[in-house]
Length: 101
Image 1: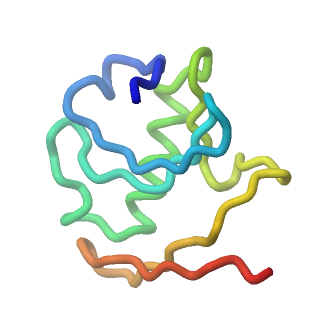
Image 2: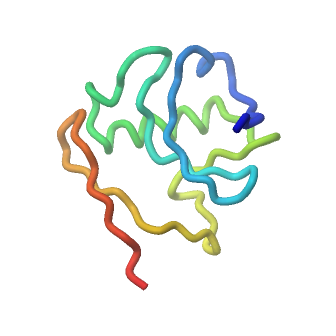
């Protein structure tokens, strides 16, 4: 599905961000795998990737067409099935923990 998005040219080449769709044009940006062709997933811990993603979105993203939100910007009425928990090692898989109902 094509997603119309406005990003600064600094995020133009081969950047892959993992998102969760909250609304048709609103997405929660959860993680960044590649930044300009570099595999940051294998080099940085989850916490470092999250800080990097938040700073990149703050610096380069314009939510005119599609909004990419960080966890701190997520609306109170947004519903997600759960969250992933990571250890502090680069390149490790997260463990999905469902939201308690």
